[in-house]
Length: 198
Ligand code: HEM
Image 1 (spheres, rainbow, N blue to C red):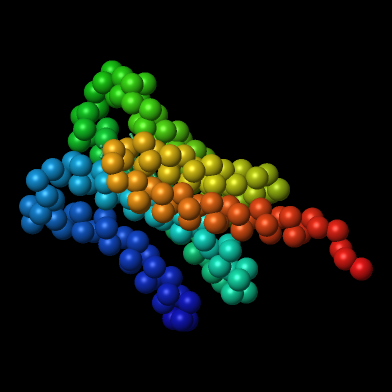
Image 2 (cartoon, rainbow, N blue to C red):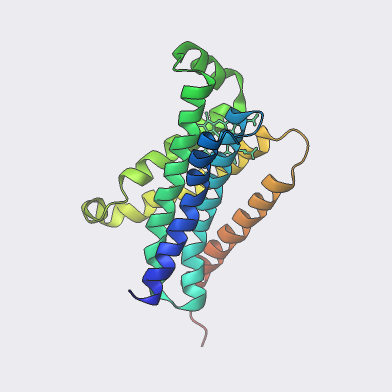
């Protein structure tokens, strides 16, 4: 296996560790005094982290000129979606046990739930169009569609911000990281369109 292949497997193993730990702690009874909150927080934080890591791949690739890094992007994006699904399923199954009326009320009454739902709905078309066949099928439309990942990351940070009641350090940190990544993107587009100097 190449060194990059090994690196990719290590990233995959690291990204799956929170899910594996949750399964392990379920069997050992170590999911804290409030298991549902713990699972919700772990899956939510991991989904957001992976989403932001997905956005770091392209800038890293530009800075290091290591083109193979692009192969991490789809994997990280799909892992973010996987955790977002676990996070949402926790809410559907463990919080509400499929009680559709209560879930609908929760979405309309609590703005942070609505923002979480919006984030999840933004991630669905991105995950659905991440296969090689879909990339080919969508052609030039694929890239503009996948820029939605910035919107999804922004709504995820807002969701986190609205969840928090007192200590805003973590959502603030994610907001700054996102602004830096977005700034990099804008700067890069401006550079590409800047008139050539004589
Ligand atoms: C159907 C969609 C979603 C629902 C219903 C939902 C619901 C929740 C709930 C109930 C909490 C815990 C609130 C509390 O502790 O009082 C939470 C926290 C959180 N969610 Fe979501 N969420 C959704 C989607 C998402 C998505 C897509 C992401 C990220 C990509 C995300 C990231 C987070 C984060 C980072 C937290 C805070 C965790 C912490 O306190 O450490 N959520 N969400």
